[in-house]
Image 1 (cartoon, rainbow, N blue to C red):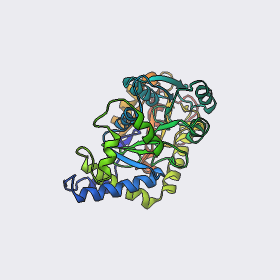
Image 2: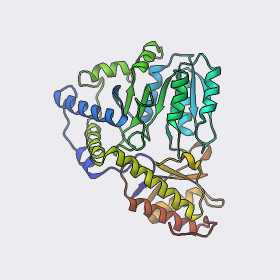
Image 3: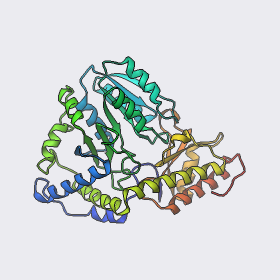
Image 4: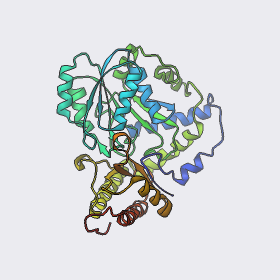
Length: 368
């Protein structure tokens, strides 16, 4: 099966083998050793000297942990949204009783730093800003460096970033860009199965956390840090996923982070060019197109369900569909983490064949 969704992503054999490691005492020295090694590896990829918290949960659990630990009921916060995962941040904040100021942009576009600046000028009571770096629902990567310069550099706000699908595939140097909390998930570019969320937490973030009044227990970051300092986790960790992530980190460092980023940039450009050469239209503003997932408009007259079923049954390709307001209007090709050029090209060839059969290629098709 050619799994071309933007997570969970395919897992290399080395990681699969590592997952079969024996169960160990999560309060013992063996687990402490692997947790400490993974923590140091994560700090290197995040580009941070800040505290690193590892939670047994999905990426969304990491997002909820960030919200629960930085919010107080009734607190006014800004949430920047460019897609369904930005909308998820809004929903989580509202679930914890926040007074949310949504700063939303049309799907397919990136957040405009000037608009964010204007909002923050008027929202003087806001302390914290939440946003997504890489919006996989639309195939857009925000210019986080520019946004952070506004949010942190001009207004000195606590900044919390959903980097679930970007960190380890796209550059997000946490300390350089002054990100207070950055969150990622093991099932994305880390080449590991789902099960772990990772959060970097800055000294400024700990100050915000100390003032926050929302209830939390399982996701209490202060409790998690106290346990991590002892080489433990507060609750039973996903030991097997720690084994896998440890090996996934080894593979990333063997390739070299610069090479990893270049590989993703190259395949992103290759995929977009091939899609356009078929006569299909990209959904994302190409200036901000993600190098981890390509979103493509479904041509008029082509039924998404029929297209998706044919791709799966006849070509063994599993695609991502549209979410929320754009369900049935786009499809997505994931290319992050562990993949080969051949897998992407096989996917593109299948798209061309099936779209051609369904009458979706309006322009003269050229070789992908």
